Image (cartoon, rainbow, N blue to C red; front, side, top):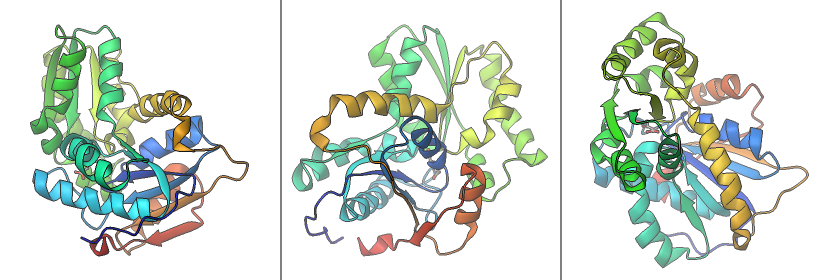
Length: 281
Ligand code: DGL
């Protein structure tokens, strides 16, 4: 891997995900913090991350960070739960400290765990990729905040490929989702954290299956609210609101599926869409 030459920051917030999923987070940034410049990177060529080893997830995430910093990002949000759970700490403690001490990388596990702990619910369900569940990142963060909360985590490895394929609305996907949620309902969870950025594409169905006794927050909204507070507390990052903020989209894949699905989900045309060769970083 070659480290980029130290370039200047360009007043941009980078949003990284293994694929399309991070758009569910970006959509909420655009809604609640619209005045900032954003650059989205989806590693669609290598998705899913959820079944890969910690080493590979770290390597891929590192390349994504290098790419986003080379584009001038002041701050990067790792929207991907899998990368947040498996790579974030090492990226912050080693890579960032040595290479970009004046910039920041944040993940999504902490804000969602804080939301869970503050909800006052005693049994919390987590649904995520196998890698996120095996890392126990959520269990640990939530227990650190409140030892009394019980956490029930299940892996739902079939959902990401179905969503990346554009199958979110198909009856087969709903059937699989129902099967995954059954044990959590049986165990009487009171709050469900969608611990994978792809799953909010199924938010309506999840809410319907969970019924009114289980609170299902929109994770992107929780992360956006937490980012709002963070930006207020960290003026030293130099991120400024602008009148004509930019939105740039990069995918590591070269096909048009990402653009098509992203436009459909965000409900707007994407003008700046480019492909990024992450292996060069
Ligand atoms: N979107 C990622 C997450 O939030 C995972 C999807 C994948 O397996 O790559 O966990």
